[in-house]
Image (cartoon, rainbow, N blue to C red; front, top):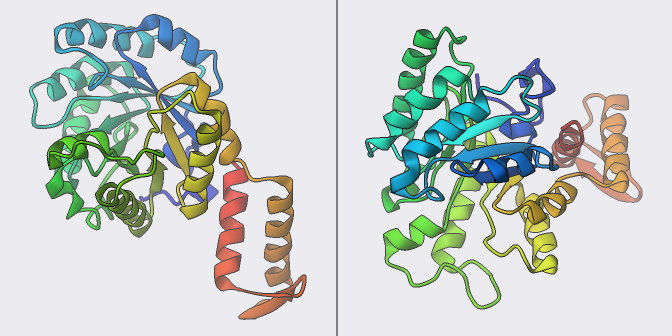
Length: 307
């Protein structure tokens, strides 16, 4: 079943630890080889933590990082959902990562440099590993980083119905390397055209598949104005949450993806207005016409508030 981020019926019954991507405002990366950073993250305000075994971990210490991640996952009474970013499926490290972490029941796996076919293959691997570990089939969910190679850009409309997949996100750094680009942003931090296109395609692909679109990281964590503006802009265009690489980014991201009292009040009034007038196509509210797209937006805002 795909997971509609606005439909509580598709949410996990475990409303505590198992906050899933459709309900997470902030998704914080923590290097898998740093228990100290993980301890700090667990005491912070991020909704979901991604233990990284890929880019932030040097090849020489990946075995140690797997051990650290397995130990973190094995802690009783985990207070936050813990996901793991494994290495790409075309590397030998991917299976090593899965064998090391799946028996410890991560809440989910993030697959970098993904295509729909690789996400499906990963799902098959997880089915076998869950069975071996005595874990409920399908309980480990997936996020795909869907724009990190040139071929992946042409597959962003193909994620509908992919098993286990709860969210799509995107990345500009690896795509820049794939293009041979010298930069992916201009001097003001705005995305250059090819990377803005990748972002838009990810957003469209996620909504077409009925799963959550997650904004990528912003590498700048010292500019307070930018940390406020970027997640606000992401929410405006339809992203449901945002990844981050530094604890300082968590609070502005959480704030941006939390509807204001004014937004909630207007959304409730729009929903109530249509409930009072079943069958109406367009109605008036505060001197403005509202119709079905406004109703859908209002329900989306109320869905964000339910996170």
